[in-house]
Amino acid sequence: MKHKFVHFFQNLSFQRKIIAISFLASIIPLLLLTFFSIGIIQHFILAREENSNEDNLTSVYQQINLRLTTYEEAISFLTSSQVLTDALAIENPTNFEQYNLYKNTIVPFFVSIYSQQDSIAQITLYTTINLYNHGKYVKKITPNDITENFKLNNTTNISYYYDAQKQQIYLYSQLFSTKNRDTNIIVFQLSPKAVFRELENISNDPYRLSIIDEHRNELYHFSNEPKHADLPFLTRMIHTFNHSYSESKKTLANGWTITFARPMYSIYLGVLIFGTVAFLIFLFAIIMLSLSIIGLSKTVVAPIKNLANQMNERPEKTLQIQPTYQTNDEIGQLYTSFYRMIQQIQELIDAVYKGKINQQKHELRALQAQINPHFFYNSLSLINNKAVMTGNDDISEMAQLLSQFYRLSLNSGKNKLSIRKELDLTITYANIQLKMHQHSFDLAIDVDEEILDYEIMNLLIQPFVENAIFHGIDHIDDQRRGKLTLTGAIVDDKIQFQIIDNGQGMTTEQMATIFTQPSKHYGIRNVQQRIQLYYGIENAIQYASTINEGTTVKIRLPKHPLKQ
Image 1 (cartoon, one colour):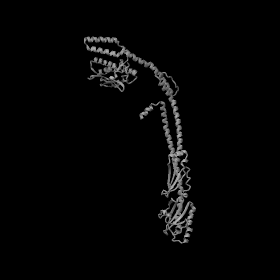
Image 2: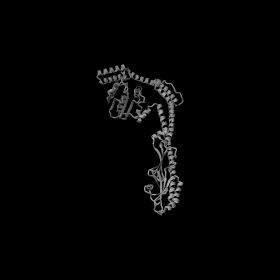
Image 3: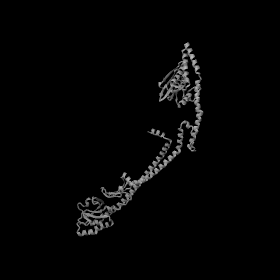
Image 4: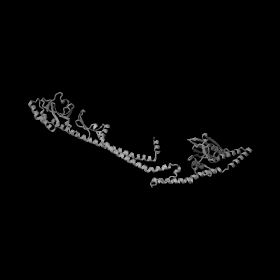
């Protein structure tokens, strides 16, 4: 996958590469900066809202705690009053004693509390003393009254009880006397509306406020959230996807839990506003960036693209193009250098390349013209006849080989022939050398039939066979018998020849000079130049050699069908 992407990117036009690289190099930091900014904004907004919720919750907590503390101090005042305790220490009071108790003790005490705490709905003494009920001030404890819900533990601890049916809060504490064992309970009856008044305007934002006791009874609930249909469109969209709340809780000493909750849509509205601003800034930056990249690509790439189009013209037109971009910047210098190079190439073609081609043709023709064909054919025919008449088969065979070799090498003045004829020429030459070397080495031929009818240059293989004999096999210093092997086959859709000898071999330094060392004869350097001129390829010839083991020459050529 990675390789395909690299290949795809490499094949893009230069203009698209500049646009892609510039855009990626700019968009990634811009995206990171935008998302980082939105994240920071969201973090600070949420932190601010969380602090605001805590402040509102603390305000509610302090208000309620102050009121409850006031109630608790008032009931503690009554339960700790020695006057009230002593007054309740009587047993079986008379009517006058009861009247005196109500008028001079209980009622004045309770009225004083009423005067200070107008939010207390009722203060009542519930007792087991043999007293008459006195309005809302004194009541005898009876079965099924409110006191049966109280948890009395014979202490002066202050406790709370919520009557869910009547929706009333009761604050109670026992009053003890060492002079009798009667049960006396001071009870404050509180209205939730009075206790939790002024809690409906603690914030201008939508919120929910609830207070529950330790038994999960909801004492108070308030919400100023508008209906979903009444919300603005943007807020309604946020609310559709997010129904959660941001909650903060505090617990009072009496076990009541205060919960302050803000709907997340009201919080994220601020985040969305800032995010929208950040997105608009990001969009503006993208537009400006795109315009800058397009302008850059046109300024830089357009001249280069124009130059590339001119270079893609036919070769004869490419060498005739004229300067179209004349400035002093780097691209102008590129144009100037390119036109100067075109002029130099044209001069080189005229002065060197064409001359070199002609020179190679002349050298080949001069080589072929060194022999008068008719003179050699007639001479060799005469030698062959004389040898036959005298019964000298070796001379006759040598004359025939020489006649065949020169006939094939001259090739009627043509530079190209079939691989079949080139092999015949090469094998004929090798047989001549076998005669001249008195068969002191072996010759092995292994050529596939399928390559014989392809076209090849004249005298391409023979020079390598000649080198293998004269520079390899002739220099064997030990008792090894020389061997020359010639192979030919199609390998990787190319025609491949190998000329292998077991001669003295070459050093790395000697192989490095094969194609550069000048020669007075028709050598390897000449063959390489002809291959470059005809086939248009380099490195068609490869050498591998080991000292005292031999040399292998590998020739790889394109397949050229034989022209009839």
